[in-house]
Amino acid sequence: MKLRTAKTITRISAVLAVILAIVYRLTYNYIAMYGFLAALAILILVMVLFVKCPHCGAHFHRLSDSALRAGRCPYCGEEIDY
Image (cartoon, rainbow, N blue to C red; front, side, top):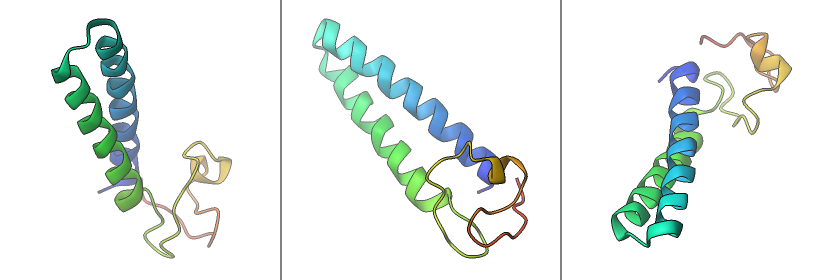
């Protein structure tokens, strides 16, 4: 999976998790709670499995790092294919 796709999935999952947490808090609907847990699980899995350098395998803790925006890994300096 390309880094840009993983970044998009993590953002969507994070927003969805926040919305479902608010819905659960307001309505105590268990479907919203399970949706929140599923969105959180997807977020964590994508971050752990796909948000890393394909060359050195280092995980990117902050996706907005200036080196990443420049298209290079902040750890090994190799070019990253978005």
